[in-house]
Length: 345
Ligand code: PEP
Ligand code: MN
Image 1: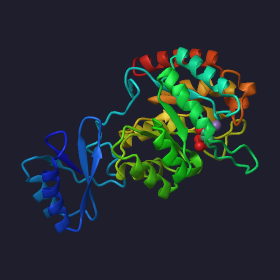
Image 2: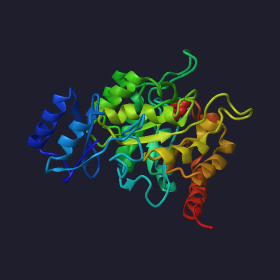
Image 3: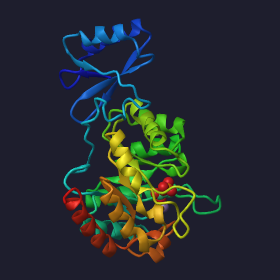
Image 4: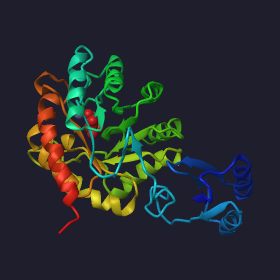
């Protein structure tokens, strides 16, 4: 990875670096961070002479050769101080970043979504979630509706909160980018869909769009999860949020096996923020608060929680696992107090 002395290289400087890289059959990719750009070397980068020639250019601060399966996501990479900003908030700032909202937006009852959005804003939620298109296990279950996108966009206009929706294919991705969705969610089922990850990274490169990458239900190791995120960054978008959400086989009584304890392992290896989803981990509204507090104690930067103004009127997962805005308010207060004290004796 190439780190420039200034905040980014000029066109002429890029051409000079590229000229050296091309001599070694490599090319470079600009990755736009919040405060500066870094440049990844694509190709067989283990060529010391190439490194020395690039490092010798007067406008280059350093060239790092990191031995890592995920050299951009690695904590030692030039992106280690990358800060992701969403709306007014920086992730990993002085309180947990909370994404809240229903599992699924009911396109026939827009008011339920809009009322939920306003109630969650009152509770201190920092971003709104809501399923527009849904990955359903059963093909006969409700699959989503593009009309729901208009509803969540209206909620953003009314509340000024950033919005998070899941995309499952290229067509949905293009529609979401067109609508300037702030957080693109890649669900557990697509967590290892490398072609989709590449398209998401490529089409959102250079923008402020963030990507919430869920941990796949069958994703084994922390490294496999981080390597999936590397696909996004390697296409040019470093605004990646890692989202543990429970794995299979489930713990008897929960929907999945809660995996918030993976957080310290991720934080040891990568700079990316961790946003835990307790709702899909435990799958029952009664257990969401405990799982949320536990996630923050383990060092998570935030939470993505399903919440609905009246869960019994919701669709998708909402009747069983959404919490009410009242519970969300208590949960946020508890999590803030754990956050403030988590590294104190
Ligand atoms: C969701 O967020 O509603 C969802 C379907 O998540 P996951 O991909 O984690 O199951
Ligand atoms: Mn859901």
